[in-house]
Length: 334
Image (cartoon, rainbow, N blue to C red):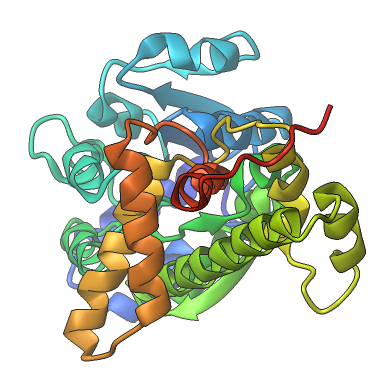
């Protein structure tokens, strides 16, 4: 019979502090399946995406401890049973698996690696960090190394799908790190969407950055097509319906086409964060020695939105840049 979870954890801690080979420790770490009765979860970052993702896990029966720099943003989760912690360290000290989805790489470094308040400092041996922020691949590798030195594990698992994907539990999850740990986490990932194992630490981030490159150029094409259709005298709403089932149909069109026509620029994903992501992409392009002109153009257009003070709008607000460039305004869909 399998060992009870508490007995297993005691045995794991003894083994993890011994000179037992790493492969044996990894086998021990993945031996007991994750269930609501044996796994305590922590969550750092309860914004547009994190709040919906947390709610899925709470409703699945998991005990969840959360932290947000603005405590009021965690209140809806507290109302459905989450516990509030005073710091990332405190979250980790009460958790077996700690998720993070914050704004910038500097935030990731702070909430995970700060020696005093960071989550890793509070995590017990055998614990798992899961960073779902879009961040630097090199930082993901650094976090994984720091976690390993404490006999813990770290997975980089950024997501795509926006606020709608978070609400519906249909996110695409790009996971990098130890494959056995990713498989262990599947009961949790399944509550959030579909996990795709991409390779070693950092590979999840590389996959997400490639995803952002694809989205950036797709959004530019969508917006340019809408402006062209308007100037050509087409009903833009009918035009979008017409192309949605053809080769031009995209997830971006489905998510944002009608929102744009309704002037709904509420953030499913912030312009500020997209500018950050595309900046990371360009930096990685330099390291890889490649030129991606579509990426560079998209980054400039989104940077223009930020320069106009529109960084807290959603990425679909790119229409504002093209309207300004062409001195046009699309009709509002009522």
